[in-house]
Image (cartoon, rainbow, N blue to C red; front, side, top):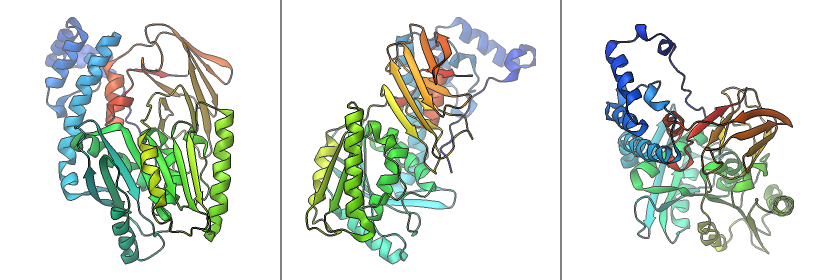
Length: 414
């Protein structure tokens, strides 16, 4: 299962106006004569089902100010659409994709205003057990932590397998859950936190690196990493909590090794790999709630959706988009690693960069009023300006209901 972005392409009929309906031609001419934002506003006034994604109104070049206005208009429209579609799921506290259903219970703490609320996704232990055992673990997780502010949400895993929190269906379910909480409950997309205990900690080890661009910080409690890599944690603050006597499956030893590995990554890349580690001497698998110190530490971080440096390593559950990088559908392979650096007006890509790589750009990353230069594995790949368009914003929002990470320009590398 993969996270698959929606692809937008110009209709071939745009090259042959005689084939289009007269009404559409007239609208296109009106849009061409109108200022770009006015044309976008007219597009948004159409019923959602009738909005053509190949409409010329979305392709008009925008100034920086116009692009920000487009992001605000399209973001608000996307939030309304998602809120309407998700209202029943939020009321029922469950989301279904295919044959998998994610249920949850939640509590609200503090009085942050809508749009400013944090979200704490807290995954229960258990796994490889009966449904009744996993249900008890879920009920325990609901009571386990209390953030100072935000929506504390404990989901129930859709399966009862040993790897219940890092099977391939989890990524899409969590994305839809986050989208719904942003649109309906006023969650700040830059303040979404991930945590989990025991088998839930296993899930944190796996999900945090491969979904790092969705979270502000993550904390692993008493879990085993299995084959998880730390590389993708470059921009995600990560905490490790383990009982010093928790030696089942060598959890305590491996936790110490991973903490040391994060120390080395931080030393080699001082701008990344923020982390903390607590291995409590003498404590077994249950840490007597000492691990609750994770919450105030995590709350001190907000997500940067436009980091200047990215390390993207593909897990066995593949993703097409990570921060401001996007690979063509079907191009990703497990273990592929791309390092991307934006410095001044130059973007440097190294590693397994596929043909058709897409750069999702914003003035929050690079100055789009000036030419940019892109190199791939030491070779020049692009030089010139990249136009801001409403289409870039809309494509981003259709992939994720996350205006903060919405691109205002797209550059496809040949």
